[in-house]
Image (cartoon, rainbow, N blue to C red; front, side, top):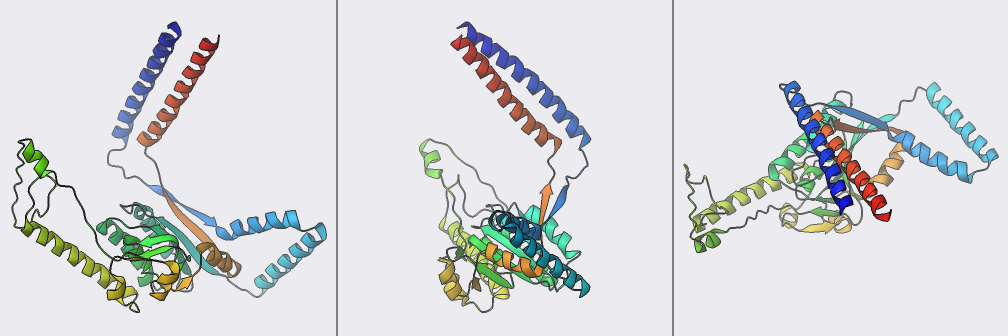
Length: 339
């Protein structure tokens, strides 16, 4: 029993010290960060180098010395020839969007697009590797508006979907001049859905009243707590239909070749069927497309990384420290028990 008390005392003291340190640092950071805006940094990675390293690794393990020497000699000769001829490769800027329900990745996407638009030319290309099952209308509307900036600048935009681009995800994908899809990727879901629980009967059963006061006929349509009315449901459905009509209009603006009434039913299609519905232009994975483009163009992957605040860094450090303290305490407990 003594060793349990010893461990508990040790852990309590360690946690107390860490909590005090975290509170002090958080207070200092809050005072220092008033009026400041959080920033980040743009990371630029050459995908050509990435593909070259993969190829070099294979060649080093497969080719003999004579073959390697001949291969490198040929590459050097080609580089000199291209340089002498003054050939400038096209540029491809590669972006990634992994969407959640709030389209949180749009915060980084907007900075990445702002950066590339400062240097990109109509002879360049932007490739977006998109993965999203959709989410909030206003959030994906904003993300789509960011992609529209690329189209407005007359820079070719290719959207690659390897897994899913549905609902708000397809709202983004349709902006591409060209949409590539893996054969079994999920696309479509051009529809709008809303759901919410209503616990009015449960509250009424327990004699709990809920007062909902509004100014404006349609300020509140459906609620979670109050009694919903047919008039409220009708207005809510009207709002959903209005949003759906805007969604369809937006898709048709960028893909006029679609039979919008046939595909805007909320259904989804796998890549092969999506191509037949003209939701996508070509069946091809992003890896296949980019590896081929790397032969003829310079590929640059852009990633805007948000800087973590000091509070966040302290929180992560404190969490790691607590875990370390717990581990050490457990080790001491084990040694004491074994001994």
